[in-house]
Image (cartoon, rainbow, N blue to C red; front, side):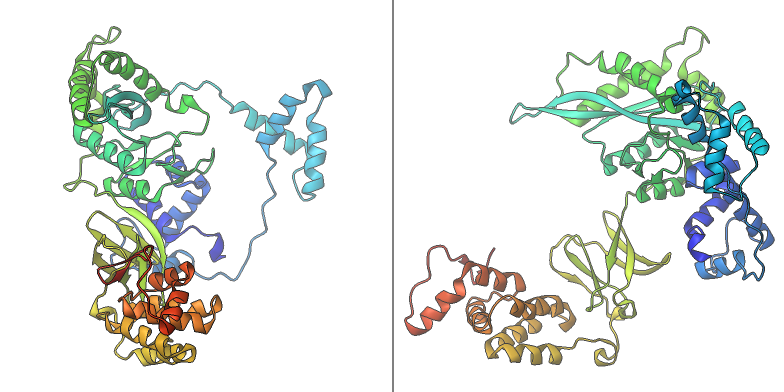
Amino acid sequence: MANTRLSMRKIKEVLRLTHHGGLSDRQVALSLNISRSTVKDYRARAQRAGLSWPLPETLSDEALEQRLFPPTTTVGAPPKPLPDFDYIYRELKAHRKFNLTLDLLWQEYKEQHPEGYQYSQFCELYRHYRAKLDYCMRQDHRGGEKLFVDYAEGLKLCDRQSGEAVSTELFVAVWGASNYTYAEATLTQQLPDWIGSHTRAFSYFGCLPKIVVPDCLKSAVNQACRYEPELNPTYAEMASHYAICVLPARPAHPRDKAKVETGVLIAKRWILSALRHRTFYSLADLNGAIQKLLQRLNSRELRKVKKSRLELFSLFDQPNALSLPEKLYEYAEWKVATVNIDYHIEVDKHYYSVPFRLLREKLHVRLTAHTLEAFQKGERVATHVRSFIPHQHSTLKEHMPAAHQNYLEWTPSRILRWAEKIGPQTAMLIEKIIETRTHPEQAYRSCLGILRLEKHYPKERLENASVRALKFGALSFKALRKILSAGLDRLEEKSQNSPAALPAHDNIRGGQYYH
C-alpha cells in the first residue's frame, strides 16, 4: 500500500547515506527513524531496479516510486506477530512480588494474537532478547566518525544602557575519538543559533564528522521519541547539505552522549570558571575570550595519553573525517502554505505568486535571508526574492493565466456584481481597491473580506462605512472593519444630516486610516 511506504525524500536519504556516506543499516535506520529491515528492503529494491546514488536528475518522485514499487499480484502470508519484549521485561521486573511468570504473560499474548507463537518458541525468543540487554555498554569511538553536541548554561552579559543581566547559552561540540572541543556563546537555543553554531564549529574543525549526535532539544528534534525521533526539517536539510548523518540521543539516556556531557563539564571548568569574574558587554567580546581559552584547552596535554586534544585530533579524527563542501550551508526555514484563489501564498504577511494551476494546493516553502522557494512534491515551482514588506504582493507574469475568466473562479466583474447587491458605495469602494493594485488579482483577498462583512453587519452600515472609507482614502479590508467595529459609520450617517467636525478619537492621519 502506498500509504505504508516512506516518502520519496526518506528513500533518497537511505540511498545517499548508504552509498555516499558508507553507513551501516543500523546507523541509517536510527538517522531516518525507520527499522533496519526497512533500510535493507529499500536497498534491495533499488538494486533490483538498477538504481544507485546519485539518482538521475531526470528521475521524478513518481517515476522512482514506480520503479521501486512495481504492482504485485500475489500477497504473501502475514508473519506471526512478535511479542512486546520490552513490556514483558518491565512486567516481570515490576511485579516480582506477585510471582508473575512467562507462562501467564504468554497466555495474555495468545489472547491478543491467537495465531501467535507457541509457549516454547515464545520463551526462546524472550531469552534471546534478554541475552542482548546491556545496561552499561562501553562506547568505542572510531576516528572521524562522531561529533557530540549539546548546550550548557553560559555566562551573563551586561546591557550597557540598562545594566541588566542578559543570559547566554554555551554551545559545546566534542569529537568522539580525540575529545577535540569547540565552544561558543549564543543568546538562545533557537533554530538560527543552533544551525549557526554547527556551521561555525565545522569551519573551526576544518572537516566534518560522519555522524552528529545531538540531544533531543526542540531545535534538533520536532518530536522526541526513544525509537523514532523526528528531525527538524531545517536541521535535516543542513545534514543533507554537508552529507552527514544525525543520530539524536535517546530521551533520558545521558550515556548516549556521555562524551559531550564530560565535554560540557570540562568547558565549564576551563572556560566559564576562568571568566567568571570578568564583565562582558557584547556577545562578540565574550566569544573572543572563549576562543582564547579554547585554544589553551585543546593544546593542554592529557595526563593519561601524554598528548593534547589537538594532537589526538590530528592523529585520529581529522584523517578519517569528511571534507567540507565548497559552499557553507545557508540557514533556511521550512513552512507550509496554501495557494489562495489569487494564486498567491502568504508567508510572513507577504504574498508571493505561484503558477495559477496550483490553486488551493498546499506547498512546502523554503525561506532563506534572501530568497523564497515553493515546492510541490519535491519539485520547485516558484522562486522569489524575499520581501519583508507586509501586505504587499510579489507577482511574476509567467505565473498568471492567459485569460483569467477561463481559469479562475473569481473575476473583477463578479466581485463588483456582488458588491452592487450591498450598495453603490460598497461597489465604488471595491472598484477603487481593484484600481490601486498592479494586478486585479492582488485585490481579491481584501475585496472578499469586505464582502463577507455582510454576514456580521447590515447593508446600511456597510454603505455608511464605505462612504467614510472613500472620503479618507482608507482602501483596505482592515480599515473598513475598524470603522465598523469602532462605530464610526454611525458618525458618517449623522454627518449626512448635520455635518460636524471629526471626533478627537478618529484615527485619520494624512488621508489614510490607521488601526
